[in-house]
Length: 169
Image (cartoon, rainbow, N blue to C red):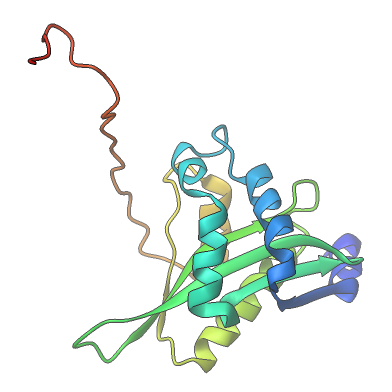
């Protein structure tokens, strides 16, 4: 652990997200989840992600404060499956402000969300990310995630006009 990590951990406050934090968390997500970073994450990050997760599971929506400024967040939920004895945790979003990543803030957020999920009876945490998100995959591997599987992401642009067909009236 380097000196910067120790300094941040001593002044870092992981706390419940409040409604007053929505705008700041949203704008931080806009900085992180850009089309250059990930085309699929960029398309799914919006203000409804925050409000929906907060309204369904506010205990699993956390922010990291450093010197009274939000520098990171984690948004998660739990899933109870019918006919399953297991309760699943789904870590939907985690992010740390550019320029201060790899200093323990993401680790602190993850450790707190994991602790809360265990307290809620979660037996398995699930995440998904782009297959080319090497930093994210390294982060989750470091925290014990395994069984990495790639999935196919496809789109169908319905706004694109079909070439060579005339419309019928």
